[in-house]
Image (cartoon, rainbow, N blue to C red; front, side, top):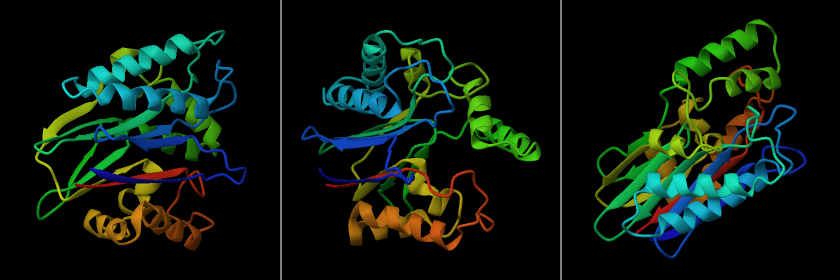
Amino acid sequence: MRASVASESGRPDGRNEDWAAASPAGVAVVLDGLSEAGGTGCRHGTPWYVHQLGARLLGNAGVADRPLADALAGAIADVAALHDGCDLTHPGTPGATVAVLRATATAWDYLVLSDAVLVVDGGAEPAVVTDRRADHHLAELSAAAAAEDGSITDLVRAQQLIRNRPGGYWVAQVDPAAAGHAVTGTMPPGRGALLLSDGAALAVTDFGAMGWRELLDIGYAGGPEAVIAATRELEYRDPDRTVWPRYKRHDDATAVLCRP
C-alpha cells in the first residue's frame, strides 16, 4: 500500500492536536486529539499524547495477526504508564478519536473509534466507517450550550462528563477498555481509501457540499492536501459561521490517502 499524509492546524498559533502516519507494514493511522478546556490534569498536553499513542498504535497494528482493538488497547495502556506526575482521573485528560487501516493483498482490516472517518473505494459507492453512536448526546449538549450562549470551553467540559462511560461515547484516553467499543471489521481490498479526522471530513459530514465519491476523486487528483483544501475553501466562504453554524471557524484537519 502507498500512503500519503497531510495535516493542517486550525489555529493561528499552529498548534495541531491531530496526528497521522503510515508504515511499511501497510498500516495507516489518524488520531484527532480532543479539544482541551482549561486544565487537563496532564503536564504534557494533547499534541504529546497523540504522538505517543500514534507511534505505539502504528507499531502494534503492524503485527499481522494482532486484532486492531488489542493493538489500540495496548497502546492506550502503554501511554497511560508514561503519564508520570499527571492526574489521570481528571475528566480533561488528553484523549483522541482513532481511525486505523491495515492493508494486505487479500484483506483490509479497520478500526474506528468515535467520529474519525474511514472511506474505502471498493464498489459502486464508497464504504464509509465512522462511529456516530453518541451523536444524539453531543447534539443535545451543543444545543444546550448554544441556548445558554455558552462557549466552546463550556461545551467541551460538558462532553468530558459523558466520555468513556455507559450511555456516553468512547475515545482513546487512559482506559484500555475503550478499545473494545471501537467499530472494527475486515473488507476486501479496495481501489483506495481515505482516513480523516473530523475536521477534514466536514465538507461531506457537516456541510453537505459534496459526497464521499467526490472527496475521494479530489484526493486521487490532488492528494490529501487537496482533501483538506476542499473543506478549508468552504470554511473561508463562511467566516461568520452563519451558513454552517459551528463553534470553531477552522478545526485541525488531517487526511491519509491510501492506494494499493
